[in-house]
Length: 197
Ligand SMILES: *[C@@H]1O[C@H](CO)[C@@H](O)[C@H](O)[C@H]1NC(C)=O
Ligand SMILES: *[C@@H]1O[C@H](CO)[C@@H](O)[C@H](O)[C@H]1NC(C)=O
Ligand SMILES: *[C@@H]1O[C@H](CO)[C@@H](O)[C@H](O)[C@H]1NC(C)=O
Ligand SMILES: *[C@@H]1O[C@H](CO)[C@@H](O)[C@H](O)[C@H]1NC(C)=O
Ligand SMILES: *[C@@H]1O[C@H](CO)[C@@H](O)[C@H](O)[C@H]1NC(C)=O
Image 1 (cartoon, rainbow, N blue to C red):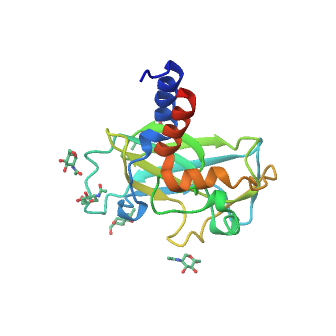
Image 2: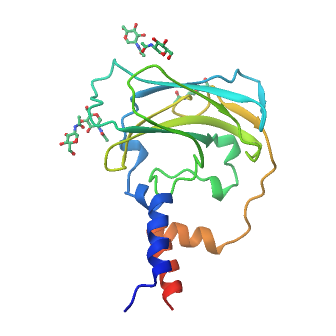
Image 3: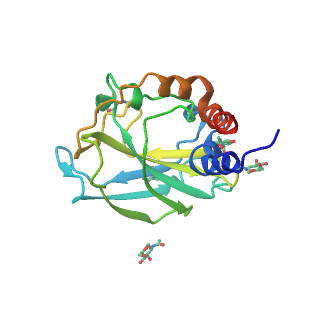
């Protein structure tokens, strides 16, 4: 069996996009060792395409946790529970391979213990919703190993309201089913098989 060059390329590309982070990592097993803040004030509605959020993060030195293996951080914009109701395409899953809470990348940076600030202009195409900010810590093997977020455990405090574009739930049953049952690896393999036929 010959591997189609396009299929090989697709696999490599999918590795860069999703599969390399698909490692069966569960949020509940991570140390919540970063302190994260985001500048929005309660009640403020931020305009996508215009307004900015200032995000800060730092290692919490009071924990008995080591940051020896912390390599990079990824800051993400995440849907608050109020904007997840009735939306399977935004659903939270403890397994990060399937979690759809945090679809928007804010920034990727090398890990630094303190003094991290990033000013993020909210992209114009951000859906109108209520959000929070989560920062993941990644190790050298590209696994999430710790995190922090600017809200409390039930994701009720310090939420950020963004006025952006109206987004409808994608009305396609097939895609989420594939995504949920095989994971992204399965999805990449399925595409590869299709290309090889
Ligand atoms: C760490 O502990 C010190 C002393 O108890 C306290 O002043 C400080 O606010 C704590 N820092 C954090 C981030 O909790
Ligand atoms: C969380 O911190 C503890 C104490 O440093 C460590 O033993 C454990 O491996 C850490 N968990 C992860 C997922 O890195
Ligand atoms: C860092 O990673 C190494 C190799 O995986 C592991 O043996 C060690 O326990 C880790 N250290 C911490 C503090 O998590
Ligand atoms: C934090 O960054 C600012 C601006 O880059 C710098 O002036 C300051 O000295 C830094 N503080 C620490 C503790 O590294
Ligand atoms: C989060 O904050 C809300 C509002 O202050 C509070 O009702 C809720 O109990 C808190 N949840 C946790 C897990 O601390």
